[in-house]
Image (tube, rainbow, N blue to C red; front, top):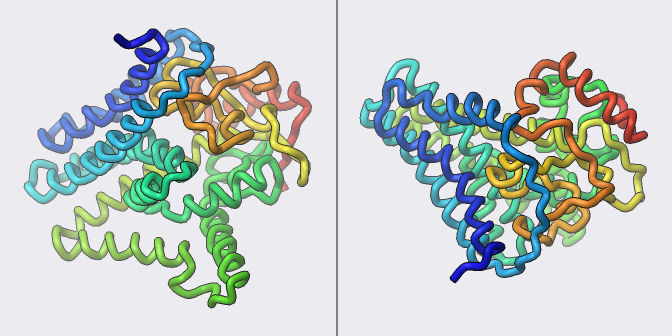
Length: 345
């Protein structure tokens, strides 16, 4: 018989529900292609304002079920992308519905695929790390494996970190600055590693260059084997996915400052304990604990009194962050209250 804490782990299965709408849209076509956009950007955003905050502590250290969910989520992520290509190849998806389906698939890839990849690349298991890299490869963001682990975690909250948004920096400006800067950072982090072992820093021994070549090859193979539309749809879902990733990055550290050399503490990240933020995103919203110890698996992440809490959950904040004046009005007073201002510059 399952204990209440063991049963609580099944709440993470809610994260699989957007995939069901994606699969329906890609296999059935037509207006079903809108399904996950309506569900994730409509229903879940509204629901986030009504569901309760879930502040319970995670204590059950049995990893078997949580790890199985990560593997299943990776499989589901791949299945959704394959179903997109299948729908295009069989003409189930055609015309504008191709792009609606690609957007729905990308939303799921950002919510499920990248979130799970983020968890897997921090694990000690080589198998899990490779699975996380595969998840990232499917959305053209393989360099995240290097930049996130060795760049972002080391530099978070400082001006040296491309993934930390400055106070007063709107999301679109952040996106245009951060995306290329993170790739460039990953490239040079790898180059530095190769120099230390006396290897050429900018050849295919450089993981960032190698994974980028692999992403280009996937695009070319899809174009040649299926069609140009299939290739562009795959690229579009990738862009939607990493747009969502960077949007979450933007929210998680907006305006919070850490002096270089200062230990990463709970007050260097924004958190949320709303039900949807926690259980649809594998505890991604308990972000402070993750930065304090990235080895802690998602189902053991917690919050404490020093954790900075967002005014609403990740879903509830979604549209506010896309309109900079509204976002600044919502978040700037909270940053000033925290006494931490990483200003643009």
